[in-house]
Amino acid sequence: MTLEAKKTQATNWFRDLRDQICTAFETIETELTDSTAPAGRFTRTPWQRAEGGSGEMSTMKGRVFEKVGVNISTVHGEFSEQFRKEIPGAAHDPRFWASGISLVAHMCSPLVPAAHFNTRMITTGDGTRLWFGGGGDLNPMYPQAADTADFHAAFKDACDGTDAMFYPAFKAWCDEYFFIPHRNEARGVGGIFYDYVGLNRFGSDTAPIGAGQFGKGGVGKEATQAGMELAANADLDWQGGFAFTQAVGRAFATIYPALIRRHMCEPWTEEQRHHQLVKRGRYAEYNLLYDRGTRFGLMTGGNPEAILMSLPPVAVWE
Image (cartoon, rainbow, N blue to C red; front, side):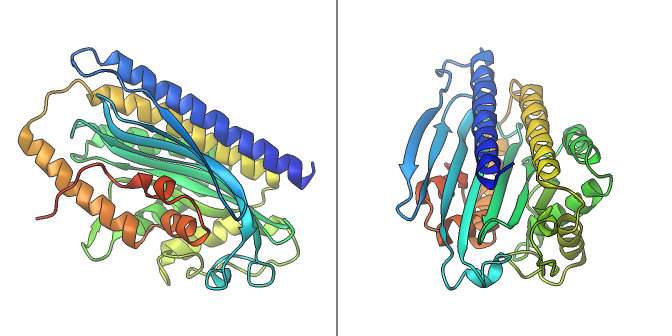
């Protein structure tokens, strides 16, 4: 399969997954019948990147989802001089191509967990440096053991279908990555985080990936380094890496709507709502200070509205 055919197949998958998730979320909006507010529907806003490529924002505000965005993009160009040293292969050839899906859901009810999910395919140079990355994490205001267990089980099943070593490594990487250092607390109850899957199957450069590459990565931390090395050296061809990323997407698209339905009709108090807004402040702090996806998007000339879609609609600091 040619590189262009691979790009097309990946791009089409991210778009199809976006459509599936948006349909599922609109169905949930319709299912909540004990509200006088209208059921939310997604609004789609396309955008163009001057340096090359485009994307589409899909956002919705409703009676279950206070704010949710499911964005897709396919962009290409050259990394900035400042950014090249952080991306595998970019220091020698700054050209890149990237396609992916990114989702953040902030819920009306403080009893329904917020969530983040993204997957992507990236190539650098002439395309011989190619890899997949992504993951998802659950951010409940009031953690429930059953929700946490089911969320992790879904991702474990997705990982185990490719490599039994993936889940423990990518779970640990997620726990380390989604930690708020200045608060000394985790952002949520975790999930999986991965990058560089299949990287060293492509091209002749098999130098290991360092923990300091590409933004916050837990520099010098054991879980991050172990996860990077496992992902980069996984014995996966392009089809294997793509199949794994598809499995991760299907897992999220199945488990997260189930968790929403589990709690969306439960009554909640103003005290619980206030707690939710405080927790959202922590979420905003993390995304603005540490998130790699935010940094990647802003440093490659992406659409600011699409990139900052991850921020909650309302939050408080005390």
